[in-house]
Amino acid sequence: MKTKSIFLLFLLLLAALPRPAGAYTERNILQHAMSRAQLAEYLVTGQRWVDFPAYADRAGWDSLTGASRERIIRAGEQMLDYEWKVVTATDYLEFERTGNRNVMENPFNENNYAIARLLLAELAEGKGRFVDQLANGVFHACEMTSWALSAHLINQPDHRSLPRYDYDLIDLTAGDLGNLLSWTYYFMHDAFDKLNPEISRRLYHELDRRIMRPYLENDSFWWMGVNYRGQMLNNWNPWCNSNSLMTFMLLEQDSARLADAVWRSVESVDKFLNYVHGDGACEEGPSYWGHASGKLLDYLVLLSDVTGHRVNFFDNAQVRNMAEYIANSYVGDGWVVNFADASAKGEGDAHLIFRFGKAIGSERLQRFAAYLNAAEPHLTLVSRDFFRILEDLRVDRELAACKAAHATPAFTWYPETEFCYFKKGRAFVATKGGYNDESHNHNDVGTVSLWVDNTPVLIDAGVGTYTRQTFSSERYTIWTMQSNYHNLPVINGQGQAYGRKYRAREVKASQGQFSLDIAGAYPAKAGVRQWVRTYTVKNKQLEVRDKFELDNPSVPNQVNFMTWGEVSQTKAGRVDIRVNGVEAAIAYDQGLFDVNVETIPQTDPRLSRVWGKQVYRVSFTAKKVEAKGDYRFTISY
Image (cartoon, rainbow, N blue to C red; front, top):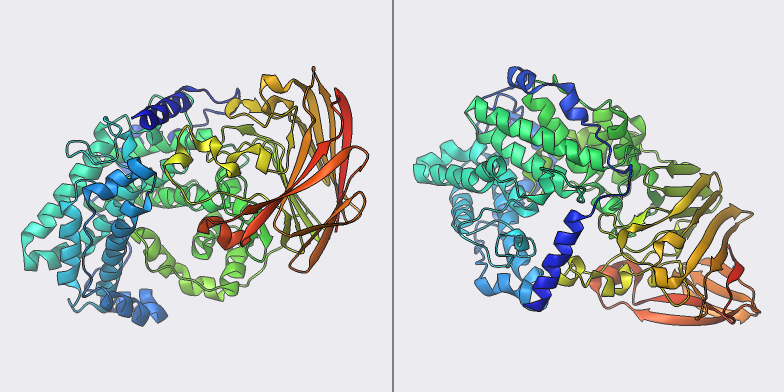
């Protein structure tokens, strides 16, 4: 299959390429805190680390579930007649045939959410009413060939989307289900034994076969970073490591094997912390913060628990920076800075943020979580991640009682990741340097977003529904990934190129101004010797200046701005933008540019939920082909 072969080549090239010089720092903060021998001494065995109520502790569960108890039980009751979904072979194959992931994922997720509802309801009520149906769900899950998603089974040896019976792949969902079923085993194995001991015996066997053994024995999982060669490490690392470690911590009785698993996780998560910049910015964007930095929190909590709290990293500067990124990237009214595949809309998980704030002793982060929770109280009780359900229940009342507050910093600068935010008067401006192979990358070096009164004016569209094409060699045929559809120039007919060598140069940030040379983000055929872009915020204006030198240009340059507001031209040299009561205008030199407005219909629900029926690209095309120039655009508001 031609598409599959191209995809595989894309993945192999991605893994082989080194990161830019200086980007990976061998800090190894976890390994420096203890030796392998010390870990064995610290280890809390026999599940004595668990401090949630036992199944039979009715008072404990009444206290933990609190006001949510009846809601939890009602949700479980809805699952008593649930028909367990069969994921067919053609459901898996649909990913190869059309690129559609949801055909396989939707029924699989419905089953997993049903298990979570039934388990939580039984723990809340404690009368055995949900045990039979819970056993049905457990047995059904055990009968599946794999717990991995069709989109991720490309990592099998045959690189196909139908699961192999002889290869146990740990991906995000296999890990999540391992998390959920491990807690099910921990709380319910005695109750299952009263039905039939084979239920618990089978469940332990499957968790050992699918999670514990491959975790210790298979070095080929890319997210582990074993024999690190410069490949990308993103949210998969703390996500899969935390889930895998949790399974060992809840099931393993052999202290030597448990120690092996904990130490393996330490070595692997260190690789992630080395890859992530010390400034703490999440290059995947706020939508992924909960799966990257947030999963690091879960991992560090587990590591602290299993070592009797003798290994604790919550006072580490990098960990604090990673935590507080989510508050710095919040614009207001639910809008966030959305570089890469992140959505522009999404407040964040208030309970997770509060937990992180408590762990690192950040009153600011705790109050920010309370601010989000006050706007929309939301306790997630349906999730594959049962550990987070339990942890969120633990802090729910404390979060509700916390004083809510949030103030956006006037200036936020991430010098290693090269993210820069300004807050001045009515405006919030976010811009970036970086390079074009960040996790969930868009070709967007030098782009900018502008909010006025917490309303987006110049936008980053984000990403549509994930398909096979999203994570393949076809990725940059998708318009949302291209620099041509970010707030950037098309130079000499060329957009930016994908790859780690395509990056910003001479990046400088100060309060109210950000500048960089984006020439290095464009391919050689663009002929860009220098293109210095400067953003300046002052006097209720954002000035965008492009000063450039080109070699042998043949095509007029085009400077693009993306918006979702109503666009009109009522005066010469000005383009007006009106959106949600906010009025802005882009002033330009009409002697230098012709203007065109392109309407881009939004038929993908992931985009239309944020932006409505269409977005617009306002293109300023130079009237002349010039080797040198100095363009200026002023966005007033």
